[in-house]
Length: 184
Length: 267
Image 1 (cartoon, rainbow over the protein chains, first blue to last red):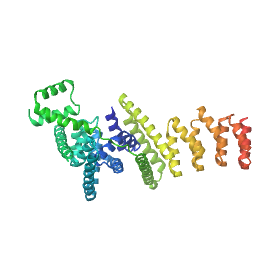
Image 2 (image 1 turned 135 degrees about the vertical axis):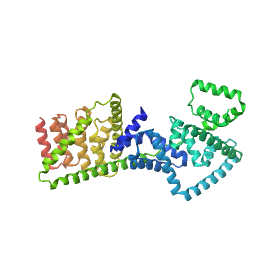
Image 3 (image 1 turned 180 degrees about the horizontal axis):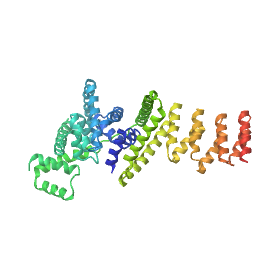
Image 4 (image 1 turned 90 degrees about the vertical axis):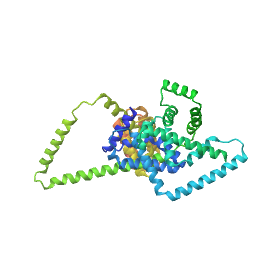
């Protein structure tokens, strides 16, 4: 029912009833914000990217056909917004990534000297940050509640089975990085 | 078992896509296959660990920016529609009897629209429309509250226009309208607030709020507008408030005259 009304609402936006985009925003802003935050760990950037998704949905509303899931269409737009941001800010972004990680590793060594207890979740977050974006992305999408692998496949443009295999391999790579960080 | 098949099965288990029987099958399989069991255990902790990542709350600014952008987009669309209509009607300027031609065209459009729309909507469609109407009201309420908090008087006036589109107002909206009527620095915004509140005068609380507001106003225009509304409503309770206002030494003579007239009309 929810998905049906999502599609119905987006079709109304397409036909010119722009007010309805406000409803879609209220329904999906948290999930989109979570997606971007897990991808870039930056609150204000994530908020900007959420705005960009809705600006783009409005601009390309004529491409929405109502076939398939609205959520998948929305997250495909979110991926494009994210890629475009990376592409436009490639140099600055990579540099800040490297600096960020170097700082965090140094910080973690200090922490371990000062405190015996390790914070596994914080290490896991750093490991996630070091995963290549496409692998991080599939894990973030697969972890969404109410998002089935069939939808993840639709977003990524692959079959459901391939999405599962990709998610498994991303998880495996995450474990490798996690163990490397833990032994430092 | 093939490695890839196991990977798929494991991801289905982890993501909760398996039913009870399949889950039991998977767990039994792990009991008999220590190698796969190890692979599973390695993945299990990390998979659940991702759920523990904290996501901060987004700021209120994100909502404000979105609704402001949406509102300006809607206004842009409406002005474009108007321009289109003007261009369209200019086609008929060259015709000798434009009223006739335009009338015929509208009749044609009306008949066609009636023909195509004359189908009974399904129950499901009605439910969807009802659900989305309720949500539209909720979003509009939020938009009103956001716009009324803006520093620009123009934005607050837009908020009042949106409030006028609401079918029914919640207690929160009524409170926001009264807060605007009693405290807004701009006279125009306060005058529009009276118009918006006049829609809800059937509610005793709104009537009393308007009565109390008379004595709080310092602008002659707002005082006169409230006095006129009280006469229209024949609200006897307002007499005391108007008399209180008359006692004030700095009262405008026009307002004084209007208040006295209003009291006489109500009595």
